[in-house]
Length: 461
Length: 106
Image (tube, rainbow over all chains, first blue to last red; front, side, top):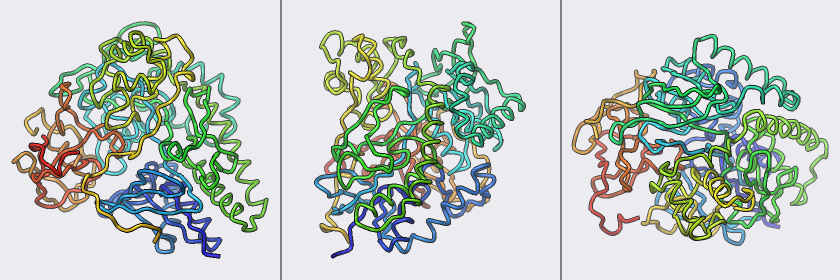
């Protein structure tokens, strides 16, 4: 029998551990990654000529980052590694990829999707101005390029990443004006039992918050964002928000990092026709998978934050487990003991994830309160009012229908940054549950392609 | 581009890298080897491009190749995603799309 053709999409924590596991079983997967270098976003490697140490770059996660990079270095010549390659469509067990101007089609027996996540965003008036970045983007500027996004940066949104990136900025010598968290502090106390599922991570988080406070940074919880102030030419000049006691305050700043946890990159799973389920804790849809990473479609496996965001540690375990599922399904002998430990750890991480979702909730209620002139689609400057009109005047109560009427979700980001908020705005306008609004259907190509794309031949190398 | 309010990004180290020069809208700009095009432009000026939909200047958003809000163009009309493009000596870019001509349309 010919060697099975296995493709992994993504060379972050999940993809690298999946590749490592398959190699150990004597298989040689194709590893497709959009990045110039491995590591994904969280452990993104700085360019070769940068000199900062692992400790300076990754803090408490230095050894995890270094271990993952070493693991990749050990396997890169043993797998068919294709960096700077976009997987842009799936049709009938064939993955369509493009590297620069060259396209290729990879036939596969098994596909492990480890596509990672992006920031989850809730619009605020003025978020389309220059100087507003996603929280992940603010972290990439620092980690990958040794830059701060401004001289006085406000971090606004919710979730552990908000505090982590603010602390990393402070440590690197950047100006941090404030941390504005939309989640009230009391929810953290309520979520403590579930957060105790990972006591060491909880302890790190508490230490980090404490260090931020001690350094004199203004940390506000339970706030409501009102407006990012500034000008069309020069961009951000300040941020206006309501404190938890109901007072309006303005903080001058020249940059805002904005983020409310993560959303998985599920376009490939969607194009492969995988089933999705609504997660009521975070009010978003995740692709359905079993404990080991099998999707509802045979031969398609889902792992890491691209399936359900558990963070880098969880992604490494999920990548290993998905590869073991592939091996078992291909008839390899996989000892049960190898899988049961991984499953147990992932169950604790899932409990912790639910704790985080309760402690730092997605502020769905802000969507109903957004002013009609607040831009919801940054790509094409479409307002909340225009989207609401698609609901109330044209009956677009389903997300893809409302997209067709309003163009929200049709721009170049393909709904990555407006889709979840748009669903909440529609749900509020139509007075229906957000799960009934549905989710944006993925369209190929999952990202814009250069139009002059040449053929590289058909079939796996 | 370069006239708007000074540099947006602040360098916090790694400045011992070799320097190089690029040209943005005809003006020379200093950068370092290993800079992305987005960083090279935003350490010299305040924005990357104008929104085609009339809501002002843009300076990128996600920095991870997902939002497509950092497109600039070469002088021959090739589109570059500034956050995933690494600068090279003598790179010449425009922050406005050159007159659309096939096959630069996309």
